[in-house]
Length: 105
Length: 455
Image 1: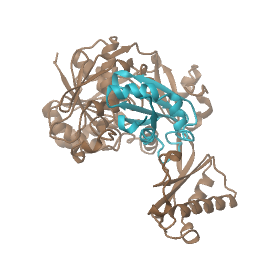
Image 2: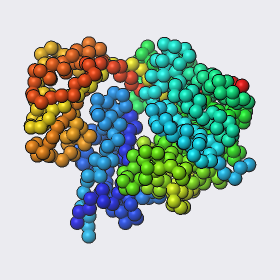
Image 3: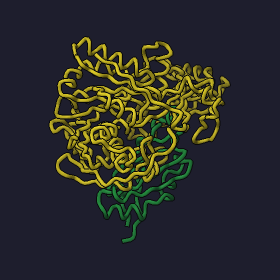
Image 4: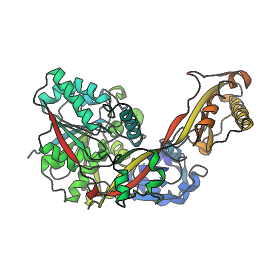
């Protein structure tokens, strides 16, 4: 079955140089089990094809029911260099919440 | 020793809600007001201001804020800690002193922390073999030395602790870490050993939660944001800290906003990398050790935090003049707004080509369509689109092509697709692009100085 990430999690994103950081927080333990298992670095990299031009790193924070993603080479140079309207990646958490996860029943 | 202290966040950046620190002081009880004013870009702007006028180079909102809060602050015994001194903390301290004199506030000790500013020491450091190599590329700073606009080491909590021990009511620093502003009063009030890295990490995590103002208390909250009451008078977060390193994040009851596990968690994840290694001058905090629970309405308990020893280095942020950029917008209405925007973009690019102009980068985004989410944005039936904004931006190392680009926007109104508007405010100007050079410096090479100004 398909689960919309926006139904089970919220998040916040920002910049670290030319990398964007996206924190995704599950609303409950069951949601965390789903994102921990299915929201992989590979899936996030594929989701941001054409936006994230570098590696995606994933870090787990089970204590916060959260995952932190670092999307390298994503902000068009970052900070003051970037020509992007969203030079700091502030809307990228919302962009990740668009994803649908295919999970086992 | 106090059983608890209440540390209030007053600003998340220079440009944040001006009323927030006034409310923190007047709408409830607090012991400390901490205010972060500095972003990387801020330092280069302040350095430019100081180059023009040696009395400037600090956050100029501060004297006006002090005019509004200084009497209350002194009466209630609230201490104020801010890094808004920028590249000229002494001038900032003197400006506050002048306000105190005007208001007739007596017995006020203002401590000024300096020593972070390395702008005049670059040659000396290079000669000594500390070439401030770029943390990302490994390159020596010699390659951009002549274009450097600012260079500052990030100081930690220690100089602020010293200042508080000297009896300061107000501490003004230059580039101090955002987290150090909050950690310092805990070390001072609870007499913490700065080698107890679990405690250092606890205060650092509290600082991370407070450093972006209302982002911890309902602002920019992606959970159920519509449930946040009274955004108009949003309460900034307050850390109620205890000697054992635990703390409760809360806010003044009579202000808006929400403090919940969800709002605090979002802020905990903001702009972090590896959560097990959150590096500051004071310690390395482990965010995976944080325990967080709701203790009541707008009260979130945070405890259990673990930390490791600080590193032998301080981070240095240098800024240098890289080149120029400009951006322009034009608005096209129904019908065929998307087709018009794309046509206008093509026409403009053809004209730039015909002029023989080249840019390091030229970027087109369509605001209202795909500017934020690019290829992830949903496709929309063009007839359903009421209007779109064409946004086009260029960057180059030289000024001329960027300047000429600015002169090619307005002509599109009379020489391109129809029903176009929104060109106001004149030609887009080529503005300076400042780039950042992150580096490390050995701690023993940076010595903080504290001086007391007083009435």
